[in-house]
Amino acid sequence: MQTAANAQARGWRSVYFNAQAIPYWLIHVGAIAGVAALGWSWRGLAWALGLYAVRLFFVTGGYHRYFSHRSYKTSRWFQFVLALGATATAQKGVLWWAAHHRRHHRGSDTTADLHSPYHGGFWWSHMGWILARDFEGTDHAAIKDFARYPELRWLDRYWVVPVIAVAALSYLVGGWFGLTWAFAVSQVLCWHGTFTINSLSHLWGGRRYASGDHSRNNPVLAIVTLGEGWHNNHHHYQVAARQGFFWWEVDITFYVLRLFALLGLVRELHGVPEHIRAGTRRDRERPAATAAPEPTGDVPTRA
Ligand SMILES: [Zn+2]
Ligand SMILES: [Zn+2]
Image 1 (cartoon, helix red, strand yellow):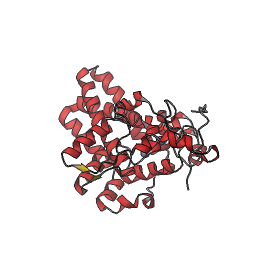
Image 2 (spheres, helix red, strand yellow):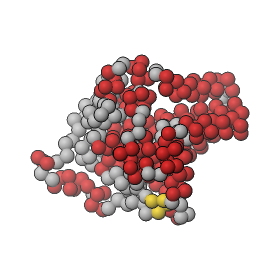
Image 3 (cartoon, protein in one colour):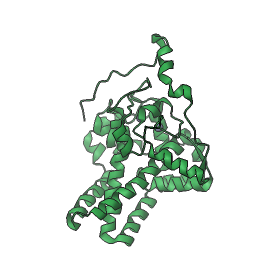
């Protein structure tokens, strides 16, 4: 199986500046050039941030909590809506995303993890692994439960179609202003907001549970990522539809899912059992010899 070390061995040019990465960098340049050419606009920023929240919900509520972890149920048509919205965030196919995320949980922060900041540095975990061409294929065996739907397989293969459609729509509705703020700026923010979950959420924050990896809980990242910043909670109990385990742990994705459940769009949101929430107690009771290994806390030095 292809590993992060193999890809990194090819060197940073091959990781960050290969042919497939060109659109990624062009959209960054377009966002900056567009704002410079059109001038600063608070209205533009409001559009970018509003659509950032919509995009990010599809990442967290769709790609992550539904397709990767099946933390709630929904109808086939709404499943497609979730897949379409998630795919429009330009993070490759829905089956690709979920299959790779399941791999992350199978060996978090070990050499088997494709995006650990402890094996490749911050920038590798943040975006190097997704830009590298080494992991382009979708492992259908890892995502059999969703790969059986032909519409999802189609979307997984032609994932650029919704991205181009969103860019075209932004231009048709708002001209250069729309293309700059609603598409490019919002898309760049969405990428980096999402990517903090793989990079900063394994580096910066507290650890409530001995999850055997470096996952962290961080209230700042929880706001930025609509709830995903409670990443140590999530690694402790992955199947929960909520990642904020207590009422004060703000989890906007979960509030939206609750609203969707009230509207009948989704159902059976997986909760957090009391013994899981109080998990530190069980960890303490476990004999030291069999306890999950605590991370050493070493911080990567190579970016
Ligand atoms: Zn993680
Ligand atoms: Zn996860």
